[in-house]
Image (cartoon, rainbow, N blue to C red; front, side, top):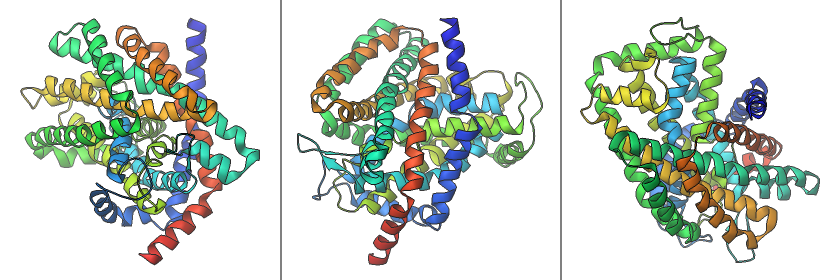
Amino acid sequence: MESFSSFLDSASGVVWGPLTMILLLGTGIYMMLGLRALPLRKVGYGFKMLFAGRKSTESGEISPFNALMTALSATIGTGNIAGVATAIFLGGPGALFWMWCTALVGMATKFSETVLSLTYREKDEKGEFVGGPMYYIRKGLGAKFAWLAVLFAFFGAFAAFGIGNTVQANAMAQALESAFGIDKIITAVVLTIAVFIVLIGGIKRIAEVAGKIVPLMAVSYFIAGIAVLATNFSEIPAAISLVVESAFTPVAATGGFAGAGIMLAIQMGVARGIFSNEAGLGSAPIAHAAAQTNEPVRQGVIAMLGTFIDTIVVCSITGLAIVVTGVWSSGDTGAVLTSAAFSSSLALGDEIIALGLIVFAFTTILGWSYYGERCAQYLLGTRVVLPYRLLFVLAVPVGALMQLDLVWKMADVLNGLMAIPNLIAILLLSPVVFKAAKTYFEKH
């Protein structure tokens, strides 16, 4: 088992090494330049289309609004609370700066993969719209790249059990036990029943639940974070200065912080940023493929808001709260570090973080169940959907009750492996994205 763990450590180092970082950032920069900064220029238009898309009669399964909420249900998770804290613990405050950079160029990546997903989506045997990287790789790049589509689907089907299921269930069980003294067995049983009730209804029920829970949880966490920043208002300029300065200069060891160089800050910021907002991972376009829309570009500008909301808004709240309160150098990490930041300024800080973890983890399980299901369906057909859902539900109590060190490592590797086929496809199909965006905005 130790040798397997060491292998996973080595694999993670390769998968999330410099080449992948260059591919992730490079793809985002290339698409941003090719789109002439469209994702940055059209943020306001994106929000306008989002609210206009709460109802739609166009082709698809769920409203454009609920498609984004389903995607956000998977992205706004433990990465926004524990992931940001871990990045700062390992890479210093400068990691937050590189998370911002990753998110800004990631908006172009998320826009592009969604446009491709809607352009090449198709109907399955049940008459439902399906799409995602496996479809635009096969249909857009042709039969000679079919193996790449299969690889993506394989990685996605298994990655869902890790980062989108057992890891989230484990985080929820630990949060409930430490904050409220609830036994993990009780959490496992209740969570399993709740997940089953939602998943058995398919994408429409997942979207309905996400459409109600995600906006509420995001706004609630945002308000709590703003309260922390307001309490430490005078420290905000110095905190932002520290974040920017630390992004370009090594940070010496201080307090419980071990010190970090520039490359570590970049690596942690990019890796945790992608872990949180999933731009380039290829997961979100699977949800957006089900949107009721006849305009891929219109859904693309809605989809890119997921990266903006997840990282520029939610992750920034977490990161700035950790830096302004000064707890970043305490030596704590993960959710404990975020909890320390909130509890230093708010009377119920620990409880707020615990509740945030619980709700974020639950919705992530719902979102990733759909991603994994669609990947499995691509490989084995619609007959695998029900067995996959049942297996996914059965994995929930396993995650809640077991130690998951190996699962964490495996999930990390599989996530990185998902990104590589998707990014290759985005680059090769970039002319399709550029042409679609130009045509759409000339018409509108």
